[in-house]
Length: 72
Image (tube, helix red, strand yellow):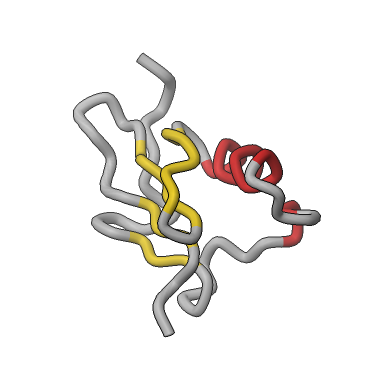
């Protein structure tokens, strides 16, 4: 089974594209952005989501520890 949530490598500004169930749901600058996108996409209570769970999340490129220090 493939992960339902895919987070792509950071672009040149540190932003990471996010897809959920094959649909682009946003471009995140920090992990909390992902939770906001999932909530808007209809996921109930994404606040309890473990972003390190490989059954749910596929990190392409660097993992969840890699974010830019501040938005451009």
